[in-house]
Image 1 (spheres, rainbow, N blue to C red):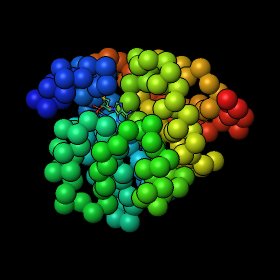
Image 2 (image 1 turned 90 degrees about the horizontal axis):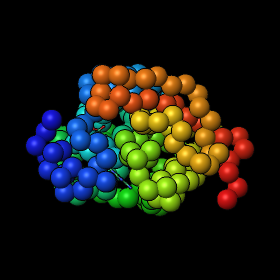
Image 3 (image 1 turned 180 degrees about the vertical axis):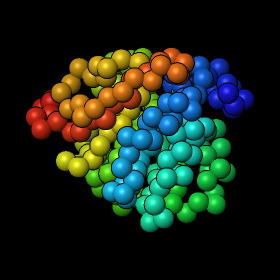
Image 4 (image 1 turned 180 degrees about the horizontal axis):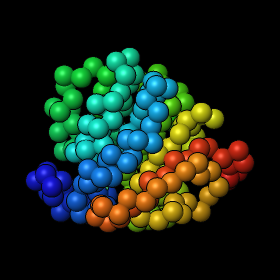
Length: 189
Ligand SMILES: C[S@@+](CC[C@H](N)C(=O)[O-])C[C@H]1O[C@@H](n2cnc3c(N)ncnc32)[C@H](O)[C@@H]1O
């Protein structure tokens, strides 16, 4: 585990969520959910110190974009240094609660993929539901939402339909990787 991750967990345990970054087994599994031949724009929420971002960037096409949206300024700074040489990657210090506004400011609508490491299933319900409603609002019919979570039920709302899922046991804690699409009948509230 990186020292930075450990420090940020101590500083903000609820926001960071888990005690250690994702394992290489989880980053490998998650990266396989992405079809790189069609991925022009990938948005990653809560990249932390960038373990999934690095794996995605390795497979990303030359003309594709990876947008990293991270709330913690220390992680953001670390990501900016790490990807300063890579023109395909943009790092934004922002709250995923402002996802639509952030994507608008970058001229992006309906990204191909939204990958999220935000620990929805262990956060306060009201915040979780607002975050997920914002994600659903930023998705088009072809956007795929990929998230790795402790529980298969991430929301009380009906905003997403499950496309597929896999379990990763070799991670602390073991997590489900899910691919979701925007529901044909989203929650009206
Ligand atoms: C469980 S850590 C995952 C870090 C990394 N993706 C990994 O798999 O190791 C959750 C990350 O989400 C970030 N985060 C939490 N709430 C956020 C929000 N509302 N907007 C953007 N990032 C957020 C945290 O700062 C942290 O970097």
